[in-house]
Length: 278
Image 1 (cartoon, one colour):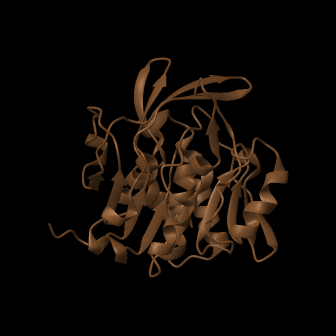
Image 2 (cartoon, one colour):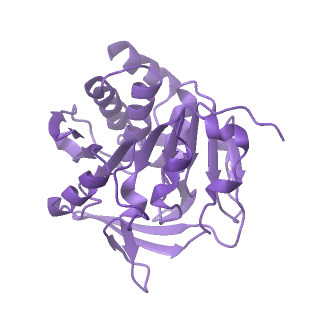
């Protein structure tokens, strides 16, 4: 089957998230791909799941389901101290070699695992694409009960830097900045989001802070995914500078925290208003 070359190609598990009022879709793959589609891009998603999921929200997005046993399932518990997370089930790892040939020429490739379902070196297979790495899923470990905890990045097969822009939050580091330097040795172009303090742009030993406008927080889930997608699209497709891309991404991420779950993904109308401002 011939498939169109995507503007934006994302790899990562769609997740089934257990929350107090039932279940909902989650994962960077959901938030980032929908945002990219609402920005008018041709979007393709490579994922794996075997549950009966309601994917109407992904209408207009090419979905490659590398079907196998399991659907990645998280239980999230929120309280005043933050989020406690359990990994209850994990879908199979993703196989980059099984994608359509046309996908190799995607303008943007976003590698966005949630539970180490991709190899860190996978981006090397896309030398003609702008690369985005959402590091959260590589920085997750879990114990026998499924309790998720911060972990170091997996070892690379070769020790040298990776091209592209990496994204992570201070929460992904367990709020411990000592884990940042080893990551910067691999990704010299990196964005660290710090919640209400804004985004730190790390590039070639320089650091700039881009402040964020405060917004009433209802649910922070997906804000980092919205930020990463908006940033790489602004830079690679819209031709924005790092600082301009970060301001654009901050604005869309701020909208996302004001509504729960995927309802927080900015609408086409909201995106249009932000584009006028940035």
